[in-house]
Length: 330
Image (cartoon, rainbow, N blue to C red):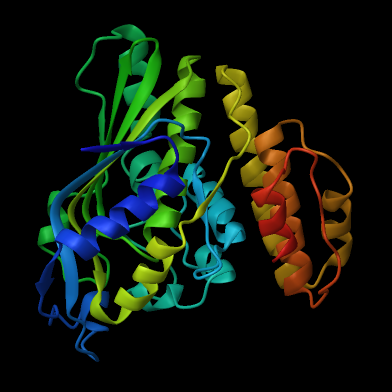
């Protein structure tokens, strides 16, 4: 397993490993899979089997490269949607095109990670955190995303995530994300941000620092037509971007989640309704927590763009360096 300080270093290192050590695989043919273009394309790919990487600082969860611009609004929107345990397709569709193509009914996403971890079968994340609170040496703190029923239904969604495993070791929370499949170029930056955010939230609930983040994938891959882009990113390494850490208390972590979910919901609904007044109100008032305040600035700027306002920029004193640049580029 390779170990890195930041996600940006891990991201570039992973792409390099696929380029140098990966194996070529012919296209998936299943018409229900995005890997075949839902039956419309030939998409051979290059992969590593059994890939694993370790990131020491889960606050350094963003990789910035001009060759593949990062949609920071989608990062925060996805985290809010997941921490709220929702599975509506409308939320991700607001931030990125193409979300509906994964939905069987055009209303829900049956494989939504947060929904499966938090609301579908009870709050697994709270339960495994509780197990660790009661027994810090516990090894049964594994929350499942993939379910046996997934192997017996015909669906456009077969979750890429298997589950997450939490360990309290050396006074900090180690988080292991287990993926059955990880698209390493264009999807990993969003999956990693999501799970590193959930990692910090869980650490807050325990009142401990967020320790190493480990990302494991059965197949770690990108498509043949993406090889030139992967080479460009490897040749001009990504810049890291660091977000404020979640507070190291349960109350503080819950406040971050509450504010993030509230901002995302109100701003998205206001933008969809053409209600500039709500966006103005949120844009004018700082959040109580630094992480949520960066999210507020990002999501409010995104809402202005949705309303057709290309000039208004919402700032946050907690958004520094590359993060501030990402917000300004929305």
